[in-house]
Image (cartoon, rainbow, N blue to C red):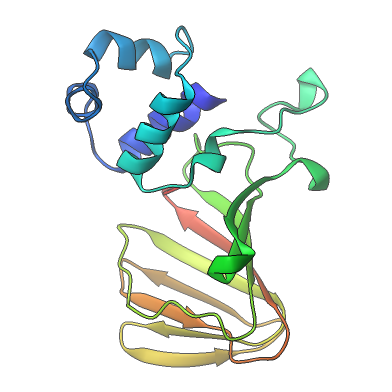
Length: 180
């Protein structure tokens, strides 16, 4: 699973094996072996990959499926990979089994008062569904106030968000292609 995730992250950022190798100070062969699951990176290597891709290192510590038949297909609720911390105001759980598909699905929990202060723009199409709470999202300069049951979608547009409520806002978020 780690190998496929590293390959998906590299491809989603449009980087070659040679570019990754240069940035990590490793050989192209080593990076290729890691992406094919033939070599296992050290914790230091995983930190370097996380920094390079701008993702938390926790992403690389997967909870394996208990049954072989479920690997890469099913993610049980108690076995999700968690990204972020409550200190940041946003905790995300990867609902997708891995990052190898054409999209990723996340369960995002926004703490009351949390916000993304500066707009972000990603080379992605994104959609979300508000499961609970209040959630405001600014898409391409326009703010939208959403409540439980509301949804949104945008494509390659700057966005930012905030939780104006007093309870956590839970949003199911879909991103294509995967960016984590």
